[in-house]
Image (tube, rainbow, N blue to C red; front, side, top):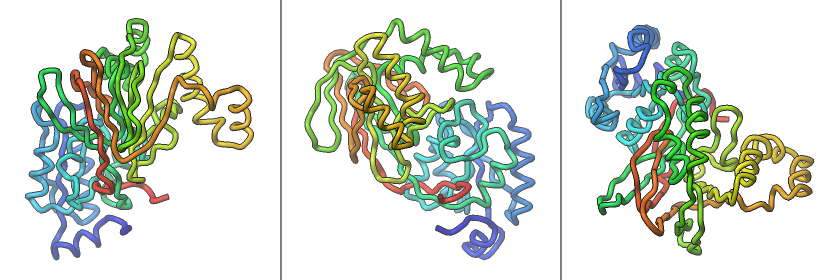
Length: 338
């Protein structure tokens, strides 16, 4: 794909190209953000940036639609995963490249595509000069306990169960201070009180499974900070969804899952010797965490409702959800295409 930047954008309009910056005004560092992007935009030959603030009621989708109507050449999403996800919802299938300047806490998507999360100048420069990569978007059509239906988008992963309960109980002040580590604190508090639930689930039009589970995750990407490889085969541009069903029977089951995602997935499975060790120790045959892949995932909770999360943000409770993939529908500026 073509590399982004001054020449390509200028040729598209015959004049100085324009960038729209969609940003969360409540985040720290907004003044530095304005100064940095304005300087980089001028250096790249762009006109003065169009600044569009998100709101509590709309974290970015409406602003992305406004940017499309303004006929800009580049959109920069400046914020955390919530801002990036909402901007993606408004720019799906638009063909407009999206640069990301992380100023949030988790920044899971930015980390997965190697965008600098602690260097604003480098991230801003990458937004103008990076390579255009077409990535998949996950669409989640959910049903609430009262029967209402909603549609949301996801770039990283969505979950129903203990992961969502953990996120809903995360201390917001602690999250501001220590970022993604606040989820560890929430997990330690949520795990003892967690209860499995029964659900039907399947990928594509395959066999319908009924199991007692702790959580079901549907992912576009599978890496978390701290060298945790939750879903090792998930790829953001393969046109597939990856599902992980976590169903530990007891505390020892949780220990196996932890070993799986922090040691076996990121280390052992990378080599032939490591995979032999997994076979000898029974790691590849354990059922506490089960993976599957497809273009769609259907989940229905047998009784009651469960907490739901998308990309690290809580989204209330649901009784069912259908996930589908929108292949190569979003253009992201990344450091390389390797």
